Length: 388
Image (cartoon, rainbow, N blue to C red):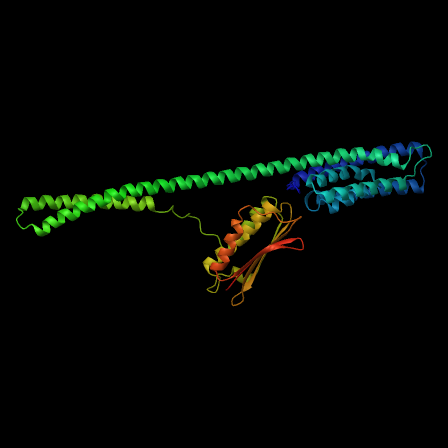
């Protein structure tokens, strides 16, 4: 199963690249010194040393791209270059570990093939002496460092997967705890309201009884009427206070002071996702950001924000490490289309309940639009169209 490995930061990549360049240059100098003892300086020797140094610089230059953007494509290239350049070997080792951390069988097979090509290229450039053990022995010995690097990468990938799994479990436990707390608060408010209802009904009955006595009794003296009126006033005041209490405990929690998100909030949402390590590309048609009277309705704008939010969240959870594309197009009279797409490896993984997609479909239905979601040709797309 692919592992959601997080891309290293730019500063970390810069440090790794610098260290790889230094180690590679030292390896090149050691090889150069050993070669000068056994070979005469000629045109072929100078050309090989220049090729070694040039390809090493190229590998070190490509290393940041392999560590952050394209670990498989660029990493395999660096591994092949290491067969012709001793300076590229440290960078190739880092690429093998990075690819193995992804825990993708096809990528591992491609890495083994690229490593075999690199070994073969090295043998072609530096032919074996008659006294050497042979090509098979060289491939067998080369498998040892390859195996060690692959095991290191698999271990790193397993650890990253465990961390992500634990984080998801912690988030799920927190949400369940919040839901239980909300249910407990609601149950307590309901209980209090029922208790206050009984008391309020009793006080209203007293008011009705005393008011009826004043209405039908004509033989009451002034003092009795004054006393009864005082009881009515006091009981009515207490009933009003208890009614206010009932309304308070039954009232839903106050709305947040922050304004509701809309289309204009999507760039901030994308920036937040990028800060978390997700590569997100955003495009919004200019009419959608208009502030004139013909701008999208507030409810529609909120729905579109939720669609983008749910699409990015699903991509982070079920296709980590892949780039995400968010596009919003439309114009007055032509409707609005929001599309969130990302590559997937293998069948898309969904949450057990699927409530997020159900919620998006419900928002589209309430807006009078349509909802589509699914994978096609390795791209998972969530698409919502609403009228405007």
